[in-house]
Image 1 (cartoon, rainbow, N blue to C red):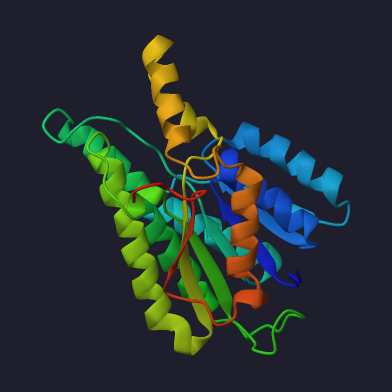
Image 2: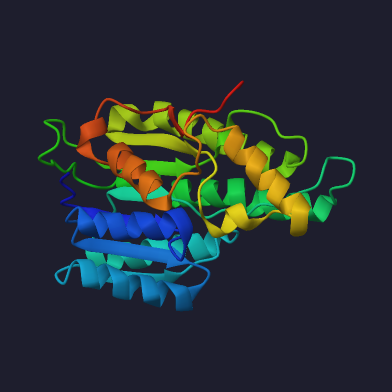
Length: 265
């Protein structure tokens, strides 16, 4: 794939975000911004990127996606150094278990602030910048583009889960936001889509009880997947590469479900 512009990965310290940042480097993107609230982990990701591509210029940024000012400062810093932003992967997210009766309002608010409002803040700043940009042409498409955004939702954004109402609600919201923005800005050369991963081997997947109960749930989770295994972060990164590259030039306002085939959905 051809990525002649600037990539921004929000939530790049671990999991799918980290794999995405590394994949941009592997695909030849030479200007990469990585952002997360965990700045020390980002420094390790930066080192790994530069091991993949010695020519890549990497900017690391601490960002709190629950703060509009922090998100805007992140985008401003990327533009100050690279003059534009072309490919955005908004990956930052958290998960908290608890059914609706027992989930505290403060916990629901925390999940909402990161998973949905945080994605809204990112899209708001990213799209505003893209609207100012001259369209860029890549070798992957004959259609110039001002930018492409992939918001990482979840399999939970496509179905329900009684033990995860806050997570499910916010991830459904990410799908709705992506479809709305994708439709609104398509005519101006900006594409927005949502990726809906299933069970992926990331730190978030570790949010299971300990002991036998945890093992039981892990086994049940795999049994629900037609492929008989959980996915890898690198597989999700490949999906993000497609959705933000010129190869998906006619794809916007939709979702890509990458869950290995969920039985009985």
